[in-house]
Length: 182
Image 1 (cartoon, rainbow, N blue to C red):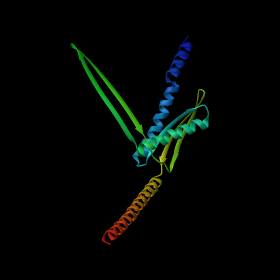
Image 2 (cartoon, rainbow, N blue to C red):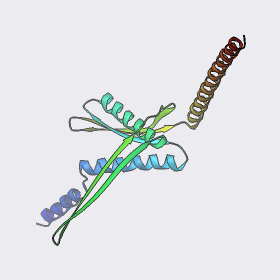
Image 3 (cartoon, rainbow, N blue to C red):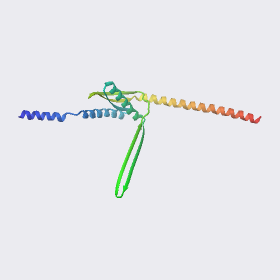
Image 4 (cartoon, one colour):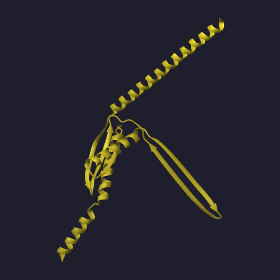
């Protein structure tokens, strides 16, 4: 009888300590989020992505794309938000309504974004991949310098165009003046 009770207690302990697949997923996501936060606290732009697909490669690609989108949100993000609050009263009864709409648009070119930590686990019917991606600060510096050079070149071209247009206008005005003074 004591053996059965000891066995039951041991089984109860193992069942109580066992984690569910959802708990494992949450723990893995928290671990990877901590990695991302550590990079950000160190001054490095980082993103986190999860991919869940039937094949390893598709799960990896999805995690990669999600991490890139997260890095893009860290770098450049336009967020539009609309909040509406309504309150109506019928007699002594007051009814309140609240509506919230958010839209997040990311548009940036990523250069030097690399997955620095990845973990994969088989799940029912496929694979789940967790990825942390960082951007090399020297790549960001180089991209900003290239954008600045491109912007400066575009401004110089506009100035040349305006100057040539101005010269043409001046020549036309001079020709018009000569025709009027003849």
